Image (spheres, rainbow, N blue to C red):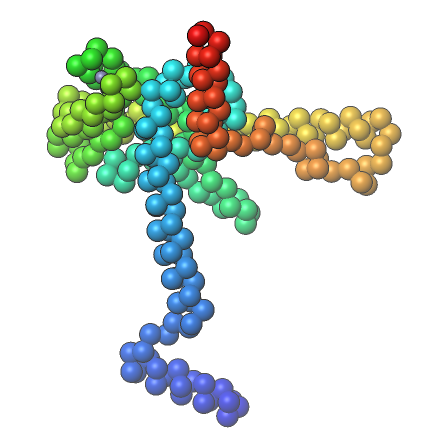
Length: 243
Ligand SMILES: [Zn+2]
């Protein structure tokens, strides 16, 4: 064994004996940056949750339009329930080294909120929507909070529904969403393969064509902020026409 290797081993042994953490500076930087990124994301999701709830009335007024418009329907709203709800609204996969995230979509959230368990009558007569709930165990009372889209009143300490009801509904809808994403991808791959094979049949050079080149995504993505602005503008224009 060379002298250099012996010295390295001796240094390593000394570090272990002294209990000095064997974390290189690069690891420390990575940890710090990951923490900063996490905190920054949490702030962003809290802001978006607040924005969505402030616009709840308008979003519900345009429910059918949102569900039928892919760029609105697919908006990521996985942040809507906080950690205490213990529901699954986001999933990350590693497909052969390609990271893929599937998050709760706005259209799915609107379908979840359409369930009777997520509605409670407000004093004003409208249906308030349950947007927050927490439970510590299935046998505990669930304490939920609702927001009225009409008078904006918050209703606290709702205990009419067992916590498992909320959790099951959210999780089941999210699993349906994940299945839909997988099916959608497979359908797009089959279509791309068909387009590729047709081009080969029509005499185009197969060496320059690949199925993956013909794989296209859905329509362009839209942010929550853009959708709210577009819906506000639409309502403003409709009100202007009426007056
Ligand atoms: Zn109300």
